[in-house]
Length: 250
Image 1 (cartoon, helix red, strand yellow):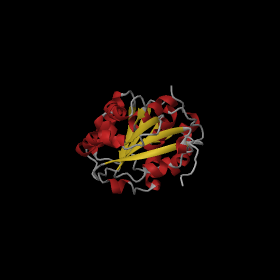
Image 2 (cartoon, helix red, strand yellow):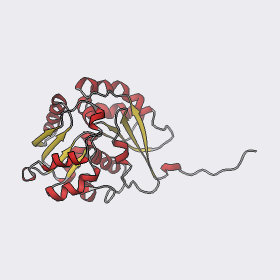
Image 3 (cartoon, one colour):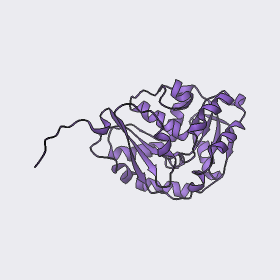
Image 4 (cartoon, helix red, strand yellow):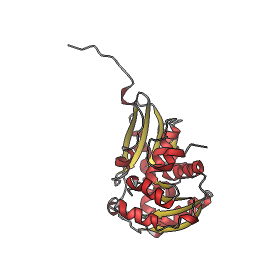
């Protein structure tokens, strides 16, 4: 016997958000789950093939798989915004090209990535001088520094764990990240940024801000904030740190 039923908006009755996560990423999803997205807001994930080694060549390879990964997000969901979750990948492929490939599958849907999100976050907080922490090998970090400089940010301090293995990056302790950030001279910068969606930082954002006296940004923090902002959702208090307390798109 067929039963009667009623339809509602589903899990995403308020808004659907999409995130394309690297196959090798172990940190982005757990951190984004800590955000308070709001009632009826659903976050849908797709995975994209990625190498364990992070080099300019392996990052560039992901461009070929991006359209297929975007297509694996639920077709029936009415997406408000979609993110590609790779900071170094967006740097190498280029945010404009990333957005074009995602929007080829989801026309008209706003698209972001950690680099685009970082630049938006810096604009929202009035940040010009940035202290940069990465886990990457020198060639990947250099590409990121060049890109940020081209976008008008001054990289006044820099440090790196110089790792190429994603599994290692995902296991760098938050205490190690905090120690590296606290080694920066806050008097020289407007904010500090810890790069890579596989590098965990959410639990140390606010304690580090209190000690440094400047905003602490991370790839996952900026990405989650920008995704919500693009979707028209309330971000105040939705996540840790000054970005979620003060940041609004300008």
